[in-house]
Amino acid sequence: MKNIVILTGAGISAESGLRTFRAEDGLWEDHPVEEVATPEGFARDPGLVQRFYDERRSGVMAAQPNPAHEALGRLDREFAGELLIVTQNIDDLHERGGANRVLHMHGEALSVWCTACDTRHRWEGTLLDGPPCPSCGQVSMRPDIVWFGEMPYRMNEIFHALSRADLFVSIGTSGAVYPAAGFVQHARENGAHCLELNLEESLGSRMFHETRLGKASELVPAWVGEVLG
Ligand code: NAD
Image 1 (tube, rainbow, N blue to C red):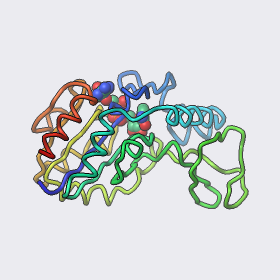
Image 2: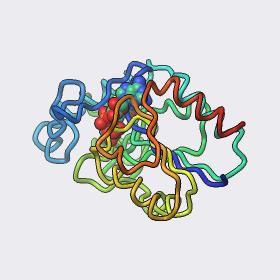
Image 3: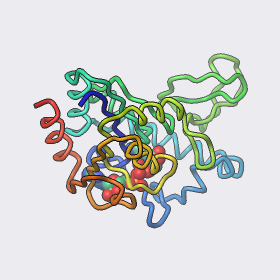
Image 4: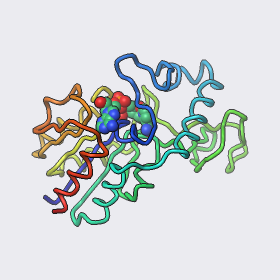
């Protein structure tokens, strides 16, 4: 095995205390996603959306990586082949768990985007109080989050990696949010072995060659141990 692509979702951070998005009822932290995770929701009530991500930002900073993040950090350090960890998560727990080869396809809670001058800044504070952009001084900063209806980041790079993967592993994702839910099909059609690690069967489970059910904090360290021998 020379080339691994991993896709992670909210399930890998659940044991760090960050709540998952509940596909069944469309709620994220008790809010309908169209209220807090769409451009229309932001246009309708920017204060509500800024407050929502201000809370996500402080929640992310208070959370700690769990053994699943740490195992992927170990994999990144010790696996000699090519590796890409594509995450749908906006938290930074992969990085704090020691992984470097991480791509945040849905943006990051600790980054903000100025729509006036198109710059991005690391941000640990709040946006609800309307701070000026450090680059241009305008009050035009929004969360650097890819909302429903917006284009996820770095898709060409992701599909290129999926095309070359010989192993694709999906961890803690429900298979409800596209385009990430379609990655397994692309990897499989290009010859990758496809493994799913999840608490329960997901919408896409039948697309995988193998599904292992259980907690990420147990399944991921065990799988990394197998890969590294
Ligand atoms: P999802 O919430 O739709 O699905 C989570 C999946 O994880 C479920 O299939 C569930 O069975 C599984 N799971 C729950 N606990 C687990 C555990 N302990 N071990 C293993 N699996 C477990 O998540 P998604 O597919 O990532 O889609 C949610 C979207 O919402 C993402 O695009 C993301 O941007 C956003 N989101 C991010 C975070 C975060 O950054 N931590 C949290 C919530 C939502």
